Length: 364
Image 1 (cartoon, rainbow, N blue to C red):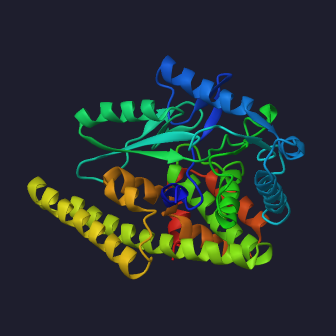
Image 2 (image 1 turned 60 degrees about the horizontal axis):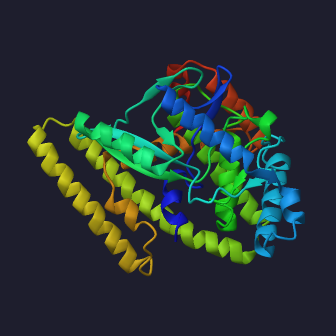
């Protein structure tokens, strides 16, 4: 299914941050040139200009009935995010935009040939981030191509939604998008919870902290929504896909761990290249085994596996590294979302070394 690959990244959809910097909207994944800034601002403003309040779209006789039902579902999810999960009560996800394309933006990530450490770009306001986003997929591919001669392995992947950290609330907030509106109920809820979380706590320049926190909220909140508000069919559909996703993550995590040990080890570069080739072949073979033995031939992750490299494996880690620590913090705070968010905000305000030491202490 089309949404299968996108969901590999953050569990409920990847993220691209868009902020107001120096009075101009600018993608946090880069403002290093006037051209890049122009496409960032223009792309985001174009998206906002396409948005209409959900109630207007639902009331429009031209709106298909199926879309009306999905939009009504999003508003129930949105209300639940406020009342039960302590997420912001603002204008985000109260409007809808048909963007007539498969994704909101396309992210570029890069890593060295023999390392999983992602390349970073540093900018005002947001600090350093490990991805660079484009509203035009051809532009993303073109930029990725410029990195290859410098020795970087690159990955370009579709991003169904992004967050402006609440900075665009005065413009109408972050809208619901056609790129994800038809996702299964459990995935739709998780995506909304994930993106709203970025408006609660944000540690400048710490992608792993920010994404792991939002992923923890989407998991915890998504499970609560499914248990309390979703139909039995929605729960069954979610469970079937999530089981495959968990098994694939376990597979890619094991691959990352072995590659990391290989790259950090004492072998020669030639030995490491040979070991890397063997690990990637093992990844593909294990994926085929899962498809054959456990997934009834499901092909939703084929493209991701075929293009897997250090960059794509590295970016996955950014969304999950601290998730167990955040889940432990949630338990420590009595499974109370509001207390949990306050504790995370306090962590976000601490120096990075102190923040990471606290998370290590929580990590199971």
